[in-house]
Length: 633
Image 1 (cartoon, rainbow, N blue to C red):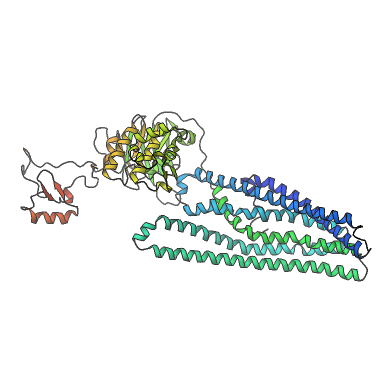
Image 2: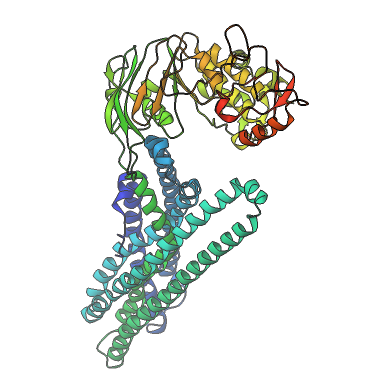
């Protein structure tokens, strides 16, 4: 009908409840059409008998009772249609929302990272709910528009073919006007929905980053941006409403003129005696009923237009292709990356190129390298969230692409760099790894992760309700709860993505101790940026562009990697020049004040106490090995 179809076939494919609802709507429409014709016939009979034949109220009892029954029947049909519409709408919304979440989950973090969270939330909530009007108003009227005009015309043509010809000639003008109006409306509704999604995403970003905006004095500027987008959304809504009101006026005018044309011809023939009163009254009552369903379809389309615009976005997500996972059983054995390369869609360069290494069962391997080298990407590849564009990953000799990912993930415990905690109790967040775990197992996991001390200090212990994303807990506490999940999961493969990122030295030491306990007896792949975790690893693999190096297991740093543990410089001894004297950057303040200041200006570092010589000085940066990665105390 419009540039979108009257019934989007994708609704029939993705929402099975729509099929049964359409059958019910057509059936109820047929019953309603029969009742409309019966009502017109009874009204015509009562009027003719009263004014032409002079029947009394007693003589009209039967047709009056039948007319009341027909009116009640039409009310029942309308109520059943409304009930079916709301039930079908609820079922379809639930099914579409579930399919949307399932598809987003199947597409994985790689796809979600390219979407705006606010837009997706609006689509899954407001967008799906906008289909209410489509099911409760638009589709029922569409069912009536299919059945009622045909039934009414069939009854009119048996009485007067001239009136039927006039209706047949003018009736198609209503769908034609609706097509023209629909073309103008749909583009505005699409723009209105895009503005709403943009407003939702921008508002969520502003709320999440409000502390940063306040610190840098940009909160008012962002408020002005939200005000501007809100104004654009309001103007788009008003433009859409303007077209809706004009279209309703146009359809009403067209329907009125068409019925008036039929009425004029009937009146002229009644005056000249070419038609009896019963036939004229019957056609006059039925003629508006032939136009009414189509006119209502045009009017209700505007109420459903927002839902249709949202449905387009929903179907675009549902039709996003998903890599078909394998079905093979997951074997035990080593993990092997064989010349793995990854390039994300829309990127001109590879995130990972030619990576090859192995992780033996029970071995702990640390991945190190500069930011952006692809360490987290490799974890996503191993989790099955990202498919490599080159090479392959093997598990026990089998290609990961051929294995059942659900079974494979059931063997993995994952601790991301920024673990997500849900609004709920601490125990519920830890039980996410094993929903059936009892309280004792949860407490033991918290103890193993070093989290029990701060948990018992909370007002309700493990039953303390956390805010959204663990609001109320520090970064170290959240990290230890994520480790508790991994302890509770007790799975043979462990993936850790910078578990000590952004932690202070004391907290880092606690987390490292917990990681050491967790890694015992498991196959571990560990992404490392801080040197404190290197002591946990059996082997270190460095990623640097396309280069992957695996050092021998003798404690030496990997090739091309600076020593992560600073080595002390010799301060004196037999055979060492300058033995017994402090180095030039570590002189007593009274003796070397003039030389210490230039060194301090050169290094740009805070003064450090020279433990051996008891002075405060700043060593030159080119003589400070390990300055790029100082170990936590």
